[in-house]
Length: 255
Ligand SMILES: NC(=O)c1ccc[n+]([C@@H]2O[C@H](COP(=O)([O-])OP(=O)(O)OC[C@H]3O[C@@H](n4cnc5c(N)ncnc54)[C@H](OP(=O)(O)O)[C@@H]3O)[C@@H](O)[C@H]2O)c1
Image (cartoon, rainbow, N blue to C red; front, side, top):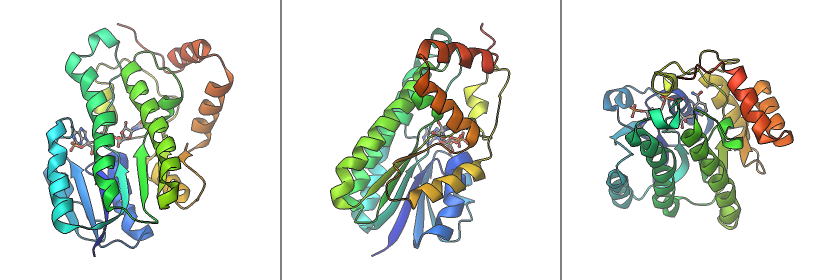
């Protein structure tokens, strides 16, 4: 039986970095790489064969194609990494309805649906890695829907891990701070955020992710000192104050 890793968002940024490293860290025969950009998926040089599965995950029916492949090939899925996601930093009313709902569809519904469809193909020792965000820990004005989707990802991932303990399957929520990827081409197109206080490299996020994947008891990871400090503060301070600090720190240009 073939042992595989399934990675959504593997065409860019954090998901791509995960795909480039996974075969170095784990014994897998193949990577199933999912995103919309087929050419970028095909171009992945990950050290093991890559099956490019071009899907627009905002469409619920798109996941049926993945299910069909799973039923046909019956692989052992060692690792599932849900990295596809996007955000919009803009006032709620200025983000289109399509995007406000699209974030729910991609960041929450697709992640849940894929996890549900893949779990029957996982065995003892399998890992589900979901990319959340530090935004999961606090309400974020001008990023309200995005932050709420990431709170969902964090909560879902941690509680699912408890349920899957009996099957010896681990879950891990990764909570990155600002990370240098194409994310901002879409998220900050209106330049609402005018200053980023700190920006991490995707390779750093993934180095910390793989370290956490190997720690039995860890079910979420916040990579980096600035990120950790921010999360610590959001746990101590009233969220009204946390929101004011966020607006000041990122120098939001309110339109
Ligand atoms: N960058 C940050 O500061 C940051 C911080 C915290 C959390 N995150 C999270 O990290 C994850 C990865 O983002 P990133 O920073 O690496 O950004 P990115 O470079 O823009 O990557 C996003 C990935 O999602 C895929 N994607 C977008 N829309 C899709 C759709 N409709 N269907 C299927 N796949 C789709 C993209 O591929 P295609 O365009 O080819 O479909 C791409 O592979 C996201 O969940 C994001 O929320 C990012």
